[in-house]
Image (cartoon, rainbow, N blue to C red; front, side, top):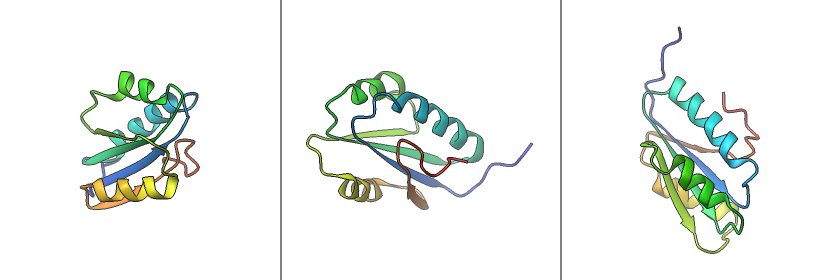
Length: 106
């Protein structure tokens, strides 16, 4: 059994019209973070989606104690959205990933 990392981590994920990917990607991300970190927060920012991304997030992750969800009511683009997440972050280290997990979560 491996030991959990004691470093605290904020992971920012911007989301825009990702209803097909969002549930599975966030389940995978949370599972890995819970297994590897004692202290983390997952900061999700919807960037003005027009599909069901927000509903899926709220229905499935809205009550999770380590998920912080924010909405841009208009599309501000990924760069601005990631910067917003970095400003919101409260942990020692901050990073980001896309909802399609271009950087393998492990």
